[in-house]
Length: 140
Image (cartoon, rainbow, N blue to C red):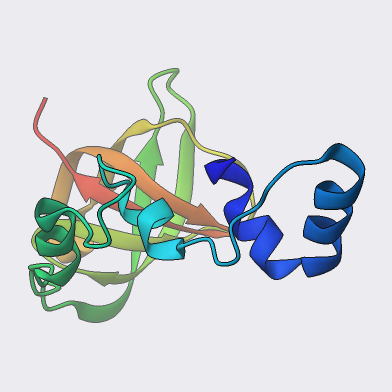
């Protein structure tokens, strides 16, 4: 019955029909907090302390590396040997964003040759949207 609690509190006509037609007793108010925090005891009104601690603890975000905006030529080479020419839009010590003339999909790992900005070596494709892609420099 707990898994239907939220639906039943949001749709009172459905709860009424279930009570009348199927002779199912539905508590007047299903506790949404109990459903979310999954307390071990059905009698307990307080959510589990570990779950509350997890929800309240702030997430530690690491700062985004400083990126340099440029417009330099670069090449990406696939494992198959296929070579694509692109333009470096911005880069940091850990990655680079490139724009290509076409919207082709790329494999997960490539070799980056961006001598104009001093970056060269293996890279992982982190994201790709349209003709742009983000690469993380890796060590294999």
